[in-house]
Length: 208
Image (cartoon, rainbow, N blue to C red; front, side, top):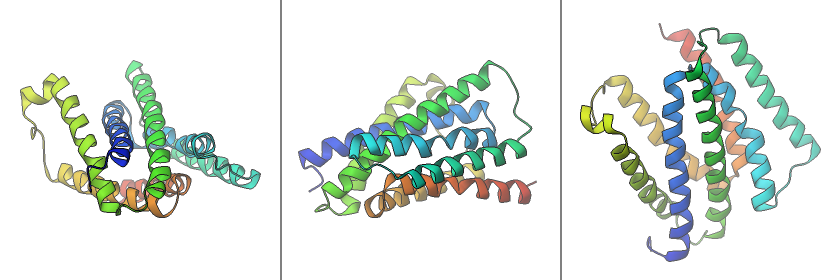
């Protein structure tokens, strides 16, 4: 049943964390370029590993720590070399703070989801997904109500084909993330997300 109290409490909390992460991500993208965002996002690798160690008790070997650090730094160096359009100013620092805060809440939600999807493995993944989405949707609605501009301009103000494509990609990411966490772990999921740097490269080359 979707409404079982124990898993519902856990996955609702994770849903709230994911919703806050989504909100902070959008806020940060207002003042940062895609490259700068990805540079700061690479800290998720080490944050996730540290949280997995503290929450799940699953530490990494010295070789794994070295690989995580190398992957994170190499992606940062790559994006620094390719990103020269970032403007300076207070908005950039605010955007950077939003990204780091987003990393913290997203990593916390990821590690908890990783832990409890396996603990409540008697529940199908799609039931766990609904439990996550209920709290996530409710939190996003509250955030929208707190933002006067969205209600004033209309929810669909500024929507176009590109926004629809972004929406579709986020939907696919949300579902694939839960399946990845149920089968693998949060650290491997974060390493997989680092490959997004390559996608950004191909998009920057192919798009005008």
